Length: 348
Image 1 (tube, rainbow, N blue to C red):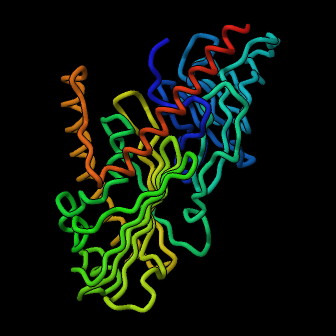
Image 2: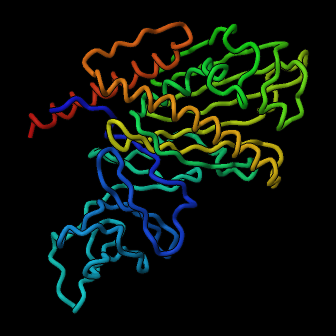
Image 3: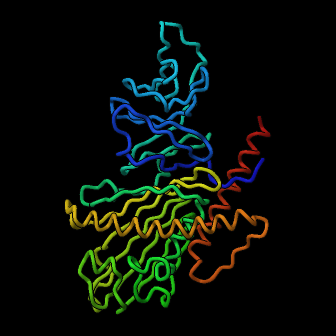
């Protein structure tokens, strides 16, 4: 059995909910598996393996018909459970003629897919309600990264890099000088960095008019295998309550496509300026710029890692602790899952 690089018995973001419109399904590869994602006319979402069992044509070349997906090759239809519901010409349906089915849920403005063999557990979906709550203003986006998803997890849990990579957006005073406070509770990693009377950041100046020195904070919440919620806040220096309303939050879902490619679903959201399209576009442009800067870095890392995979040994510093803790937790969970799989296979 090969060494796993992702957890199977877990939820992954498969799409933004807004991507599913009309009768055209979405083709995507998730954890090395080709899948097709579609929404029936009743509004419910289905995810199947992207392969018609008749002649192995991609189901994604077809279209949605009612609450089923119709193969674009011969018009055979399958419902959300993968059951064949129609063969042209009124031919009878063989009882074992079905497409592979994946549990799917729509929650918090995302479409989630369960990749494992164990029963899907909705409680494992992270709390990303700020992406769909009417009291928040989400601005969603997507990037396809040519790197392993864990490199981007490292990136998001180490914001000391903003000073050097994001000079025109997220950089500002106090980041490299202020230690990151990290806490590990069970399988979750949380961290925060509080900075007082420091230079403002371009994004705070543009979005909130904070031009002078500020008190600012970064708060991170990481849930395995690949979900990270980042809260960024700032107030004028000397404010009596340093932890006030967040300026904005970034919700991050990093879904493995393969060992060296990642679907990066993100949403920057805020509890102010609801309906303000100008602020929406300001955040979209600045966050897209910052994440494309990250994309260049992590993809360059992956190229070097892939070229010399047998000699990769990272060196860790104190500001790497949150990412290091997340990697340690994920490694343990993958080992436990693989051991449980071997035990189950031996018992059969």
